[in-house]
Image (cartoon, rainbow, N blue to C red; front, top):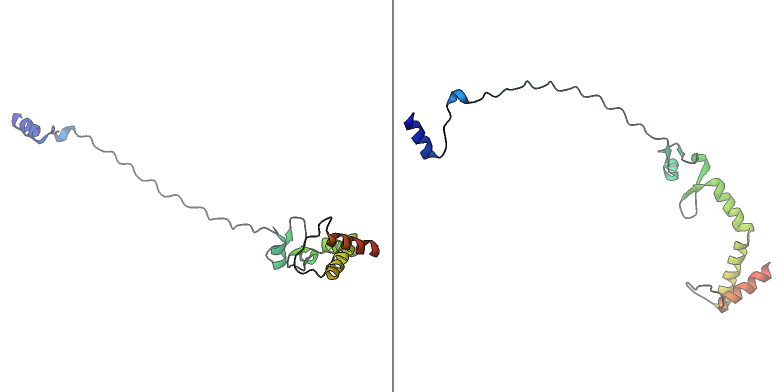
Length: 135
């Protein structure tokens, strides 16, 4: 016994006898659980106007279907009803008269490119004059 102790001391640690070591208890692995089949993803019927136009959705959040939509001059998908009302307002309202007056003033003053129609400028006064004549 003394020899073993001396040898262990030289190596740098105590040596345990086999009888003292603890046995490791191994647990049985649980059988893997069966995975549930994934449910099919529910495709929404509500979408954006362009999606309804394209045909990937049935209607918009506001309830518009393809028959209620149209493409605007600029290429946007818009409501037919609102578009028609806006066109009507543009034709019958004062804005179309003002635009016509501004175009006449541009021609009269020989303006090219962008020019702001600010109050107090000759351009604005000319446009205003044409607008009053047209009324």
